[in-house]
Image 1 (cartoon, one colour):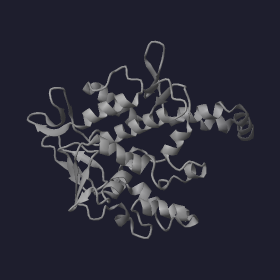
Image 2 (cartoon, one colour):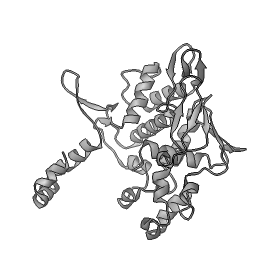
Image 3 (cartoon, helix red, strand yellow):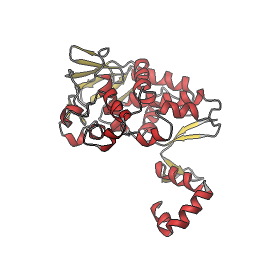
Image 4 (spheres, one colour):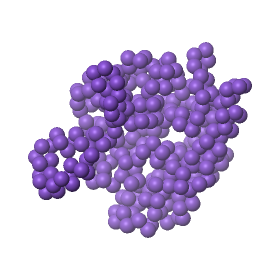
Length: 308
């Protein structure tokens, strides 16, 4: 899936808040937002007042999380006219390529989003919209051409007992917040039941404005964390983590352990480098010795330079 955290958030809001099951009288009831949290019905960038908890959504098109997908889903994009499936992908996600950009990023009939803090429902919708959608996600043409139309298909196909490391910054931060909140063990090694239980407990937190502190995520007698633009929708990321683990467990072989790390540590436990897709891309190439040799021979020193 080529969608990053922001784009997947935009697409999720567009789909969820266009569904009459969640959109009632202009209000979208989002199970992935905390109880007590609300914002204007838009995929724009969020800022939160640290005194009174007021949420402001930017109207700047450049900061709208739906813009990358909406730009792809344009009738002026040759990809849309090339294959019928590409246009179907957009329309299935409530984006009409023939409409102007302002309408493609808008969520029709929706004025406000209100959080309900229902992790079970959140996980169901993340699975339906982002993990195992009916059609491939827009702008995912390269993955589609490889034979995989969704993350769900990838993880049903993958089968390995090798240790697995999740490196995405948002995915790692979500797990670390559960540990910080005391609902997930620091020795957690990737069990889906444990992760889902912890996520459900954490996402039941409510948003409260405390005097002298401002808006916080509040778990009674346990934990409070300042609400900000990074963690206000973290339950969706937790649902993505839970779906990843569940699909890996359902394979013929499952990883002996799953860990969430942002960096490479030396024998003393000190971080010496950041993990990310760059490391994965390098490993993918160098582990295919024949392909690496052929490409390196054909491109010369520029091949190595491009990987640095």
